[in-house]
Amino acid sequence: MSSDLLVETHLSTAQYIELDEAHAAHTYHPLPVVLREGAGAWVTDVEGRRYLDCLAGYSALNFGHGHPALLAAAHDQLDRLTLTSRAFHHDLLGAFTAELAALCGMDAVLPMNSGAEAVETALKLARKWGYEVKGVSPDQANIIVARDNFHGRTISIVSFSTDPTAKANFGPFTPGFREVAFGDADQLAQAIDANTVAVLIEPIQGEAGVVIPPDGYLRAVREICTEANVVFMADEIQSGLGRAGTTFACDYENVRPDVYILGKALGGGIMPVSAVVSTWDVMGALHPGEHGSTFGGNPLACAVGRAVVGLLATGEFQQRSAVLGAQLADRLASLVGNGVVGFRSRGLWAGVDIDPAIGTGRQVCEALLRRGVLAKDTHGSTVRLAPTLVVTTGEVDHAIDALAAALTDLAH
Image 1 (cartoon, rainbow, N blue to C red):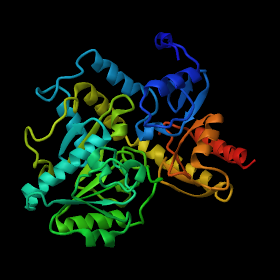
Image 2: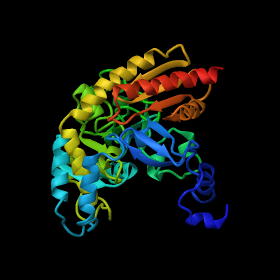
Image 3: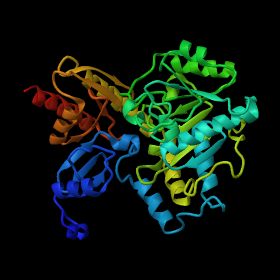
Image 4: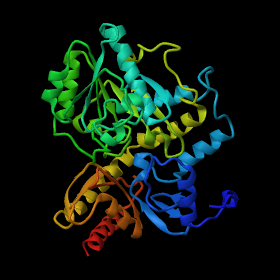
């Protein structure tokens, strides 16, 4: 591609993709669409075509594209102050942390940026708590995780991944983790020993294909951790903040972990905002200089985060997710046996298993793209649907009608 295209403002779809592939690291395999604008549940590409967004930035866009309350908070703060670093106080950190702690029913918030950074923070917190509060011998702490997990892609996190794509050729790996089957409370209990400091799980495994554990599993994890004096850490980066039809996926079993790990929707699709939220009994193990982030808890992030917490405080989005999620499940059930071999859903979140005779998950997503719906495949045969929580009943029907048509397209 000619270098003069670098200064062009309007290229064709093919030219944008060529430019991306020439200079952006090849760590993703995106669908062949180039997006330029978004509003609510819809996005528009550079050719002017509109698409219903059924990925929602992996749940980062729970409140849709350009939610007016979130944009207003960001615009107002941009004119005031964007960054101080935590070397100084600023006027929004206390309010943001107080309001988020209250939403979680916790005491203390450690704000970070990305979801993976929040998970890494939680791992450090659990180890520190284990040594200083539980009394584990130095360098002997272990943390129990679930197989088929996805918590990010840093070295420590992929150290306990069971996904070969995420893990192969990235060693040597960080020690101190034990893997057990997701949903098996008995196996979890047997894996705990005197040096176990934490259990880290996703209440719903998102990247694995929206895998929902058996009823009672989260309650059992809570009871096991309490009895063994182990910190229960729930990674609600994708499942939390309204996505699953409740504020947190743990709410389905009226369970409160010791640590919430939050991200994605916490930044409203505007800022990378994440947080570790806990009680002072756990968070108090960290002291000045032991952890930090230049951008974590910056004024702009806090402004947007406060607006997000405000939207969730009304309960409107949780209710929308629950009601429209029931509609989504009903419509998906009608496709079982017609190109779909099964699905799992909770709130406005579903993993749809495609009949291999029809095609791969990627092929279905490409067919959906042609019909004006954006979705993402995972693990070869599963399509994830995660529309924004501002989607309407008609738009849910539109998405499933498009999926049915896409399956028909591939079958013929």
